[in-house]
Amino acid sequence: MMLRQVPPEERRRPSSRVAGAVEWWFVRNIRWLPQVHAAMFVVFVTLLLVPPFLADPAEDAGIFDHLTVFANFALWGVWFPLLLLSVLVTGRSWCGLLCPMGAASEAASKRGLRLKAPAWLTWPGTPVVSFIIITVLGQTTGVRSHPEAAAEIFGGTMAAAIVLGWLFAPGKRPWCRHACPIGLLLGVFSRLGAVEFAPKRPEAGGDLWNARGVCPTMIDLRHKTESRHCIECFRCVSPPAKGGLFLKFRLPGREIEAIADSNPNLSELLFLVLGGGVALGGFLWGVGKWFGRIRDVLGEWAIDRDLLWVVESGPSWLMSVYPERREVFVWLDFLMISSFMVAVMLAMTALLSACTLAEAWIAGRLGAGRSLSRRFLELGYQYAPVAMVSLLIGLGGGLFSALKMVGLTTEVVTGLKAALFVLGTLWSLRLGERILAAQGLAPWRRIPALLPGLAGSLAVAAAWAPALF
Ligand code: SF4
Ligand code: SF4
View 1 (tube, rainbow, N blue to C red):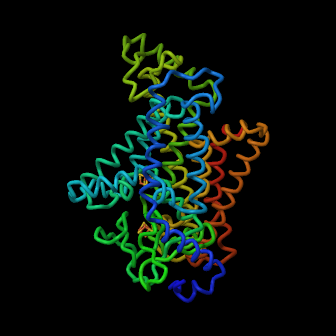
View 2 (view 1 turned 90 degrees about the vertical axis):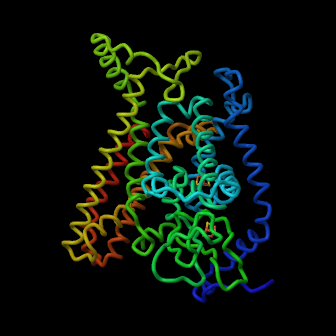
View 3 (view 1 turned 180 degrees about the vertical axis):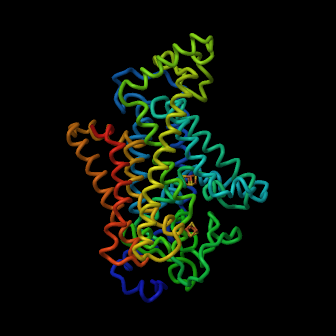
């Protein structure tokens, strides 16, 4: 076997042999990727686009009794939670190796118009906005309950990925780099992950964008310092070559601990606070009876004023309209749910921003380096673990239902969720401490500086308490 070319410091690491074996395996087998993507496409179409055409399952149907029940379980009980958890181990491997949407987008891009990507697409806030819209729409249409809504959300995402790929960038994945809400989510959390593709011959100057190279997400390979856009497709990896990238393992969280070296940016920070907040809003409106009581009061108020459209149902692509399943949303439901989610999102963003600003300010007063805005930006990344747990419990709640189905008691599942929050909070605290250390703050001075950040993490955990109890 030819020698694997890696920097000397990587060769000395114990994990280098395992990384080398993984590299060789993928480089040898990457030719099968089109078949894998084709198979995933068939699975995608079967699970998402067939159930809306089937008769509804019986109320007591099990996951192996009806395709609709199976698809719902596969999507929300297995795929989404495992997708979130997998980034901690394998980064964005889903995107590069399995996702049929990204592969379809790239295939369309190879046959498309090759137009220059417009500014609205390359704007860093685009995936944040698309995540918020998809999350709100997912709630108002009942994406986790109704196969029609799942087909609309995921089928619409697939269609958008193909159209954008067809329109822009030759043979690349503009959708995956600039717009995909799932890609954004996986990209941020891949910074916590245990794998990295690093340049063998890095060049100074920070991350750059290069639409002419081999990378489907247009990473300039020699300038790569961050994980978020890397979909782990192995196209830039050739073990015996002196150039390109190599696979290395690292301790989870290491990239965020040294976030100053890995292109921290405001759009990711906004995603962490806005995305966690909108998921919290989407969870809280369905908890307890208070929402229904306010709805009744507002409905009566509107009827008294002849605002009858408020109590009529709207289009089914915007809200749940399933009389045969005894669920019909009216405009009042739509407006209340969406505005409540946005309000919680903004409140959570204001709270975490205030905590982070206080932390950055205290750190500066105690001797930390860099400007206040730079310290703020870097410290915001400490919320990645609590945000991840929030999304896991909020959007991936099917995992916990599945655990009950396989025999775990409610108490055990509740304990598991609580343990996740404790671990997430402790990990966030640890990341905050490491970021402050990188900012040059002396050890004992980190303790008072950390307190606002800890308060922010605890506030997130407390807001999710109804999910536990
Ligand atoms: S970025 Fe989105 S569309 Fe692209 S591969 Fe990842 S999940 Fe799929
Ligand atoms: S950096 Fe390499 S492994 Fe990562 S997406 Fe680009 S080509 Fe694929």
